Length: 325
Image (tube, rainbow, N blue to C red):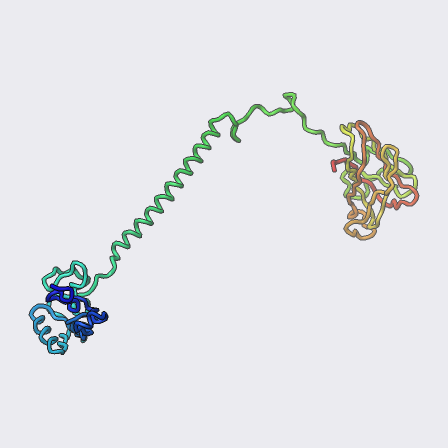
């Protein structure tokens, strides 16, 4: 063997790309005429579905040797069909897959009806998985609610069993007037017409119905300058501002009077308008109530209503009372 001769197997026979090198061309290497660029390869085009198995494999090989494609066997609906029990030739040959076999390889179970083709999705497994997920969520919610309820119950027992009293428990007897506790505030004073001290032309009468004083008595004759009524208020427990309520009546006209508290006259007259619009001259329907704020001292106070110059005193008086503002 010499450097120029490597034996029977020359590089151009081993290297499919020897014709690309200068030394290969010198030794007569030629570009391949077959397919895929490899020497001695045969460019044979085989339509999909023409591969035969079993007894027909030799016939298909002979036909391919003469450069003709063997016609595929036709099945239902014009689709290529292989031998009975063999994979459908319309799909890739089994030996092209890892672990694939020839005609004797075991067949995979098929789907509905035992026909050829790939298996569909495992819907039963998917359904079981979905049901399992839903069940897990429901169980988790139930456990959380049970735990929350247990904590609430525990808190209620602690509150009920502790020292803090509940609404149904009593911390002790409530104070009452008989036990020496704080007594309720006494009612504020009130006075009927008969208990008022009259002055000037003021007098008592009971001819007009509707007076609330005892016996239906009211003060009349108040429409003369100098007429007045005085109320001596006893038992004011606390100094401060109070509301003086006056029930009066007019014959469907507006009226007013001067208010004097503890000898000091108010700068504004006590308003006794014809609220509600009673028809003029109707005394029985003219009963109304008005009020004014007064400042009283603790103990005894005097309140006076007078008809002075500038007042409209055509009115009658029923009763007076005090209330808080």
